[in-house]
Image 1: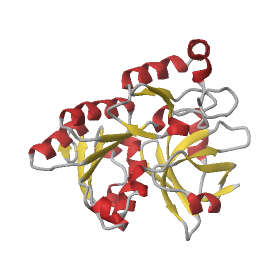
Image 2 (image 1 turned 120 degrees about the vertical axis):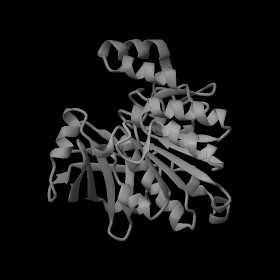
Image 3 (image 1 turned 180 degrees about the vertical axis):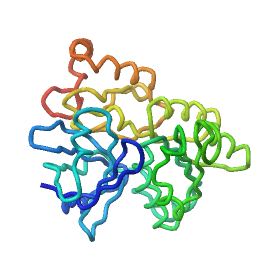
Image 4 (image 1 turned 45 degrees about the vertical axis):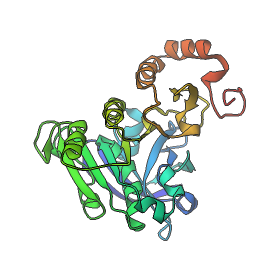
Length: 294
């Protein structure tokens, strides 16, 4: 069991949990994710790591209520416990493999949308702890849905934008990014994490602006081990799986239209059967049993 040490409501239907998980906290890095089960027979939910503290032996996750299983999670209170927390899984952010000197030479901008703000935080914190202060754009539909503003304020140059103009800049994250570039900002790397449609249009813009871009495909994960085939996607001319090959990929090579269409098909039992038949051995990846990892 993994005790809930604290629970905080960040906005409507979005909650932050600090969970005691010694082994996980000892090994995790920014960009990785966990598989969390509320009860023994609950659905396994992949959640990107929001933060971790090796000394306190804790990990932080952010959960958005989107259905029955996530409702069970957000119903937990401080003092309750998750049945299982498995991880860290996936590959860490490529930033973690670079030296402070290499990082200091780069001008980096993060673009975060909605609950995607949570997995951006550990990467920005990682950079700040190594003397690098980057730019961060946080986008939300309105002021009430902006999360983690206080956490970001002291560790980055923060720009908030809302679709309705109720807080910060007015407009989508793409407009904020384009405006910053027009104001004289220059970037060597963009890292975008958020809804699929947001990441798609960020990549369209950054390709036009010639800014290399990394995206996290965590939103399409279901099983988190490559066995279900849900997060199969095309990156360039290769078949990849977000959970075992990512979750981060070169955004300019990701086929977003295919991935989003596939997401819709995968939601029905008939759709899953059709995809399995169509994709054959490449329907799965990384489980070691079906050959889909080849």
